[in-house]
Length: 316
Image (tube, rainbow, N blue to C red):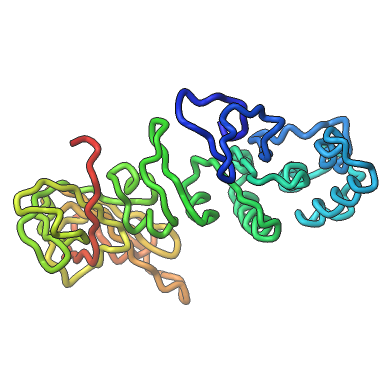
């Protein structure tokens, strides 16, 4: 709809304050990088990048300079005469990006452009995209199902569900203060617990959950004792030992620089992570042949929760 390829059923599409709802795609100051890139195989890199300029009637001298500038922006200076089939996946991504940016769009639309890359190359390209966005000073609208990419690349994130935006804000805000149950579970790991407000403590409320009482960040004035609510608990907010909760370890997983354990607290499962000191590798072995972890399945442990957040439950 922003590109002009679909017409909205209702409402308006505004670009820089102007209503472009009925404006055809060719008359909008938008460009798109597609998931499959669609580079022209019969054209050189320079011809691919300059195609839109040529169609717009830009003269050859100006077109040549703008193509050179665009290739330099994406670190492909000197690649103009190459064939797209001779490039790596990351290089083809940058050609597609240069082709979109060379027309100086008001907004660049990116449709899962890194989905086909392996993890290492995808992470490299994420850093490249951030640099290119800063250097070009162009607004990027980046659509992805990869939560990690969305969180690491964006200044502002909009989470959509069933065609509607359910939460929007800076990535840190969405992670630490999600507005709904769906957003809390969609962005990172979270244990979601239902419970009743049993009292207020300053600006917060204490919620009696299946795991035990939890103090949750909230505007206490918005909640009354007895209200049924949902709280979200991130793994990093759960500490091992010295807390008010008691449970039994039901599962342990080694994740490299940290271990992760699932703890059953009266039928409610909390996830706790514990970082490892990687300065010296473990030499002891556990009974199942793995490394010697600080958690043991079947062990009874005490847990503390430093922070829980109230979220809206869409089911109620």
